[in-house]
Image (cartoon, rainbow, N blue to C red; front, side):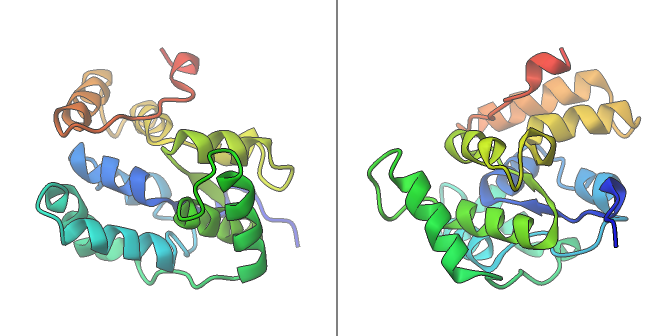
Length: 183
């Protein structure tokens, strides 16, 4: 059975979901991807967001993600071995064994479910874009989603700029890996 691009799930990492909430644009996710099947996030990503909601400095953009029922149940780890191999490979780039588990679990889920991956983590984005199982056609960042939403008429170009400003006002930095493609 061939999976059409419009039938592919979209897996969001914690940073992208937090940017959607911080920008006040979480509602765009079902507008853009509501017709796509679950899963939408993973267990480790949910845990990262729960940890953020427990901290005063990040509660404002983490709690709305946890309250966002559209995300549904967090996906389990489909292939723990693959997840740990991906995490190890990413960690070898920065010598930190405790990082990248959420991003690795998202990549593993995206590979397993033939999904798109949305990540605003620069290292994870670049790593996934180079993976033959994913590649540049199956990796996006939140900025790309904002421009997709503008292209679909869900928001205006000035609202795209406003979303960027709101994220920056929270002290967060959007990846905007493909921003030049849309400017």
